[in-house]
Image (tube, rainbow, N blue to C red; front, side, top):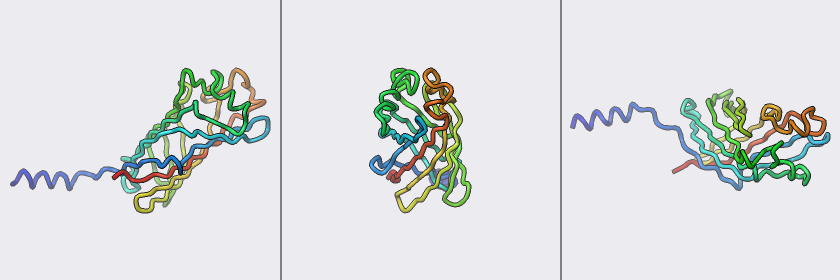
Length: 183
């Protein structure tokens, strides 16, 4: 009897795990819009997966691990689409997947957070900060965030456009994720 009581006390004292979430693909997306020849080109990564553990009350346990299928990247421009998989750009033959892994998630103010982590792309790993907003209603969460990446950090386009004459260095990235709490 004492063993059961001790076990119950230990379980009650242990911190509850943060919630795990499942991405709703039809309501989620990762978009990018590089400047190409002076105009923004809208692009997206239609294939990605994410392992998400998040509870605003347990941010020390929060984790995000996102894998992005680079070969599926598409834009509004056929010329850009033809270039993206190539060795000078995403190099999908050698590096088919980009991966973001969070190292910390902190609250900036109610409903606003900052995820810090590492983005690995083309064999290069770079620290990235992603400010985002989050609204949780019941078992559904909607996250929106945006950041800007410098393509030079990942050695993207450095053979064909190192000076940035055709493709701008900053690449704005927008993310919208709708997720449901795992049962």
